[in-house]
Image 1 (cartoon, rainbow, N blue to C red):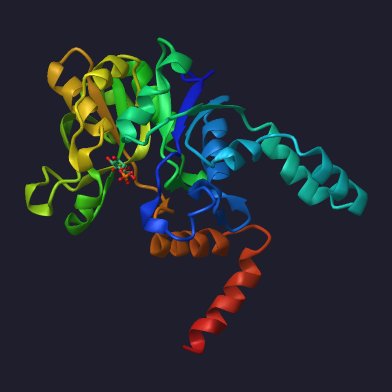
Image 2: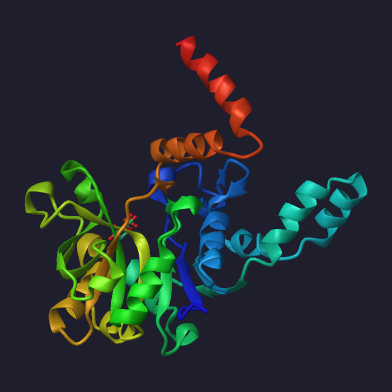
Length: 297
Ligand code: G1P
């Protein structure tokens, strides 16, 4: 049994980097091969034993919750066609998790989005998954983060080494070895965090990727966290306050697996090609086409 049963998935951002594609549809509904990106995120949580997903949404994003609802008319149509394979895929999304929605109102930053989840979460540790980051299902990270939080308390963030010139796109963490050897070398103690530093100011090349297991103590800190970078209430700033205070440790799990970014058109294209190439039904045909496409360039 996982000690973490709830995940919070903020999706209310304006996705300015993806306009105009996402002017009228939520970015989380853009398809990655044959499922919207949000389905990968909720599936990742379900695979880690998390059965309760709270979506933090905004105006015009009802389609995201609809995706996890039963669709009787569609299901009857697939049944009548005898398309059992697609029917099974459609029905599987209904049962992935109990999906809840809370509206963020104004999009005042990631920290503000997480704070809107306080009533739903209560006094237990919980996961946060950012929809722009997809973790390859073969390289899961949430179970290691949940185990680290259960052992060490406080909060746990996911970290990944990136080239120094890319660090300004991420929260960045300075780390030292953790006390608990039993959890392995990939679990580190976080001593300092800064949101999107310039490469010359970055304390390391460890980027915070969008997975967190947070202690409920984060909520009180978020309530008094002023707007930071971009004039937004930053989750990174609240975690930094906790790390400095000493009462609520922050640890990191260094991820060495495959992570994909769906937050901007170029990285999104790379994600679709990478996951398309490995797709169990489509991958072989897609790769045959891709090889001949590249040969003709
Ligand atoms: C957010 C976080 C940042 C983190 C990033 C991961 O930034 O604020 O700390 O590194 O997600 O994707 P955003 O990309 O939403 O601007």
